[in-house]
Image (cartoon, rainbow, N blue to C red; front, top):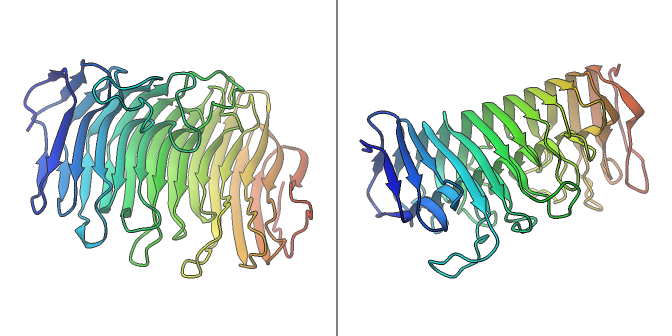
Length: 393
């Protein structure tokens, strides 16, 4: 039990011993503040398996911008039957920053892990995060490594080619704010600034990620990024606000990178420089083929409200790109109850979707303003094998 506030001058690494269960709690709101020399993390839990873990109470870890990660659950060597539940409630993390250079303690690059408020890496059975919050994650200009080491609020990662991954993931009743970088607008280095990120391996006995009842503000790259090639997943009941400059390729606010699932009850508000490069509000795009054991399910987007005070045009409301050549897997999408008081170039962007196999798209009860077309494709064929439209207004 944490029964007082702490200023710590060196990072804490907790080794969880196999076969033991752990419960970390507080008697009242408590603060752990890191004031030591620059390091990768302030508080790290390391396990090699068989360690059920629970964190609750009201505990804040302040990295004071001296660490890349205030909280790090490091379970990379845990897989299969060694996985146990990891349950978190009431944890808050703030002020994480990656810089250029090396860490004096071990001489390793300061950007070895990227910047994260709280990161859960490796194998878990049920990973359940509730009433958690992250604020203030950034990195120095040029300190990121695009595609792997950026800025991240809450992250769940694993080895997608093994069972060193979270079998079940739920993140709910959360707040994430100010996930950015010091790379200037329009620079190629200004990428990978995500509020919530979940990477989950495909498992027959696993379930797909659920992200619900959260608020995400000023996540410059993506509010939500999920890659779960087992298919499906639910992202719902979120409020998203963004006014900061986007990532180099244009920001995507809710991104199911595995290409299907359910996205519903989302309220997105834009202001300021949100569309300095064209925005995609919601995406179910995928650039990887799906295993036959995990076929594509229907993708559904419903009950979306977009408030846009920028006065600028978004790129597309919904991205559906699927550019895997010769994949004839049938695909279907359903869009309903979508309202946008701003302007977009197109309603959806399909890429090669429908070129190699049947694609069915149903649109109903949609009220949006488009400057170019219902859909626009960057694929050379620009065809749909089969498409259906209920109504678009």
